[in-house]
Image (spheres, helix red, strand yellow):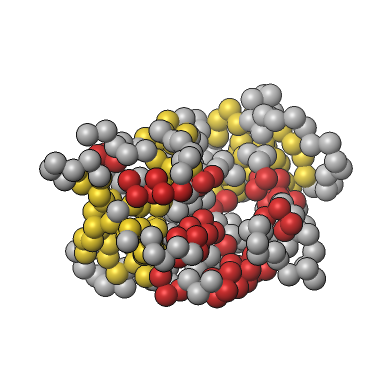
Length: 320
């Protein structure tokens, strides 16, 4: 029996647990979830910053979010969404889907809620080729930071990558007198009523949030270096090139123009973050790429491996 630690009970963690549990003679999954419920980034909360236990808020979900992929391609192959739903569903529908999935495969019995994994280290036993893993975890509800250490045959890292905001180093960011926030903390468009807002970044979130707040803001400027949006924009929304610098009250763009700005909303993406992995795990993030990665050819290679389940890749055994 191989004991497998799964870090996170979001989409990837639940999927990993389900497939591990489907072979109970081989695998014994232990899922660690820092919050009190399953769903990961799909769990909406009004909270930003830190929660009541002082832990960082994981979810970047905002109130009006709908999926930018049809449910037909988002679903697990053998577990479709409710057919009565439209193709592009609301975030509440995705969370219900994940809860239904969890209930269908009876996964909650494998999950330790309110439990943070703070330490993962490979253990090389003398005279044995197999690598084991020490996993240190704690109950976030307790003030004590003391860790409980348990040993596992494998670790699957399923902590997601939409929780740690990537903040660009903008010239003048320290002198700007307006509000600066990241899309990670965006929840409602009404807070921008009658304000002039510049959004930096035209990825899916940048474009979606820009359109979301147009109904309430006085003016919305979408700043980016991509191709211009070809569809018609709301009358109070314009596009500008990237940001050159900030002044006390204005955003200056690389095309030489500037805009008086009340709020600078950074839609600049997220950083990969694995603070619990010790240096011995030999995991690095270089130019927003996790290295080294490979796809396993045999499902049972999990017995000697620390996985990162994002994109269903995994991390190889650290060198001795």
